[in-house]
Amino acid sequence: MTTLRPTAAKARGAIEFAAVTKRFTGGAVAVDALDLRIAAGSYVCLLGPSGCGKTTTLRLLAGHELPTTGDILLDNVPIVGLPPARRGTAMMFQSYALFPHLSVLDNVAFSLRMRGVGKVERHAKAHEALRLVEMDTYSARLPAQLSGGQQQRVALARALVTNPATLLLDEPLSALDPFLRGRVRAELKRFQRELQISFVHVTHSQDEALALADHVVLMRAGRIEQQGTPEEIFDRPRTAFVARFMGGHNVFARPDGSLIAVRSNRTHIADHGQPATVTGVEYTGTGFGVTLAGSGAEEFTVALTEAALHARPVAPGDAVHLAWDEADIRPLADSTAAGH
Image (tube, rainbow, N blue to C red; front, side, top):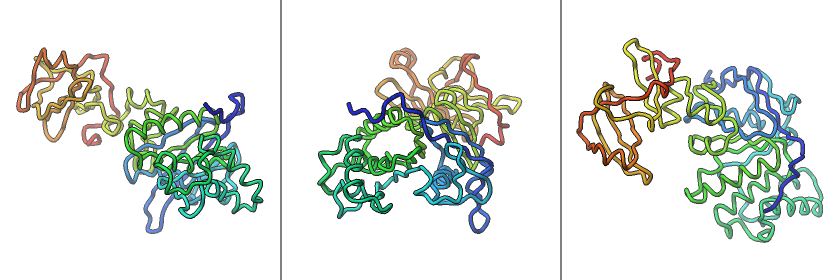
């Protein structure tokens, strides 16, 4: 396995957003008074639905957008106003944006060429970057002669050739098939760990964020709804939005109007409890997912083992009750009205 950088190397890429707001023409606020600190050498996923501000946040860090107010620091250096090439960041786009008429080597060397680096030096650095991602033997090929996974590695090498302190990734796995996505996900995590630079990765995929991130930042309407480790975000959601967006949770309203969340795999079909009607039963390969309709428009899910379903069979149309253990309750900050 190729070693990208000695593990004793000092971590780079500490990032700070200080009261950053981005307001577009017409008054639309994409990022709203954002305060965020990212530790050097960490893998951070900006997660959230479309329009939540995650991509704008990435573009502000890259220098492709300027904040309306606030400041951004990279390794304690203010970078607002600096052009992208002088920020110490590199962007890896969703489309890879490889030049079809250039060889793999010249694609990787292109940013160095734009900086005026001589041909011998830029090709040497491009070969080194390609070796890092194990693509040096493909240096003479054109992008069309590569698979999707190989093209992504070339795009990664092109981003790393400038030796950035932070790599910015905009939905980098969305174009890959599920099998390849899993492999590339593992490679990205390995690259980040060995390089010891910060990766800031925009995604709308909860699974992707949970698998990759040291730190998840879940955004909503230009603000941070919740941030923390993947385990904290998933197992201890603070609001109904977080519980529903992350999935794997049921949100229940108590008689006093407060809300609670209970994980789907810790919600049980029982003789007494929350009334519900079975609407579907789906085999998942490791068990069964049972979908149920509650009062109003609320929908619940229960994850059952094969043994549990066979011991107590249910079918669409069955009236059942849902129950849970007190220890599995996660109180939510919302009122019932705010949770919907």
